[in-house]
Image 1 (spheres, rainbow, N blue to C red):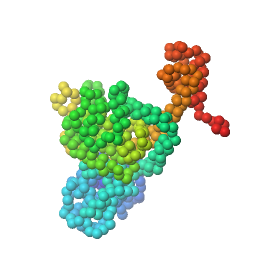
Image 2: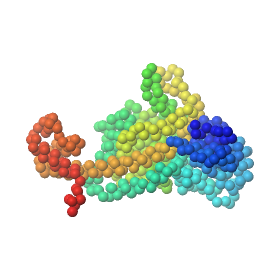
Image 3: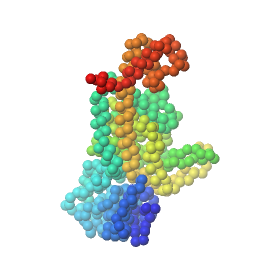
Image 4: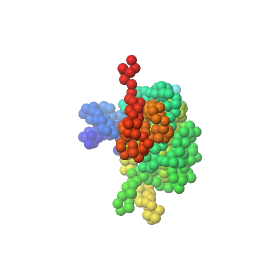
Length: 513
């Protein structure tokens, strides 16, 4: 394997801490190895292996592995949290005292007290310039708040109770330069208001249909109407409010499974297999951790609200990087709520034009395998570190599990980069495809309807049915002509088909001349 050690090599940085203390966490996104005969980099699908010459080695101690990580690597807060619990406080204090003005020592000091809540036996830092907690060239960060004790700027996305990290990857950099916000605004500005109003109505319906389809359900009748109304009132929703979350859950699930609040039982996501056993796909946080994680979720929402951060990345941190869906606070409806939160965050930040909704779920449905992969990047990574068993005597009430080890750190601090990249791609896709196509469809449909009604004065519902059939199938077959439009002759239907085709054909340059 590319990250296997060779003679004279050792892990350093975050992986050095994982190996040294046998930490129960997924491997970091960057694995650093010192002692190599040459400087080398191997980039894998989900990880980078960096080999450094021996001269890069700060020293074979936990404090020097930490220093290396702070200088060269993106941060993994779950690794830091557990490493600090294993490190000797006296040794950490001794290092910080030896480098009182050092940026790496002060950052290590800040992270220790920020993550553990335990203050080290050190006086406040002296008059020295502030340094960022997370390096902006490696992470998506907030403008930050000064921590005067450490002379460090707290630019993390969340709070110690819940804090995802998004790495600044080439893919995210390219998406940030895509100009998709301006593209969507320009499309809306250039659209006839009446056509836009009708397109918006369809977009709400489409998002409702697709978000339920992702869960294998059909949204129709009252259920669909309730969810559309919820989408239209998205600005009135407080994502940090347990009351609003519960009310929304009650809207989108069958009334028999409406929750009274957050769950107080162990939950998991799975599917039935032979032998009446479940195949486990994802184990949710322990019930005793849900309240503290949801308090952290509220802190994350408050910290990101109005912050100077790209709105799509904020939506990823709040909703799609699974700060909500991975906590899984309800028994049912979590997926639909987290997609609702995407819309709320984009709307709250002014990213979506007024009254507009981007049907992100449509982009998800078009490639659900990629959506599942984004979920599994997290669930598969943490699965080996969860010690669970089937609960004895639970067969009558259905399968139940019990988690036997500490797991809160796996959900409290995680790398949200893969999910952020995925969500950004979905938003770009839905703007360039769904929004644009729906505006064009309404324009064509209205023109075709006008032409059909000018030719034959038929009921609107009948004309709309004919136009849709021609737009979908290019023509109306013999059987549908006989059963749906018996009052029209073949010649009349042929003529109406030509009218719809003409409305669907964009004008050529010669027509404009």
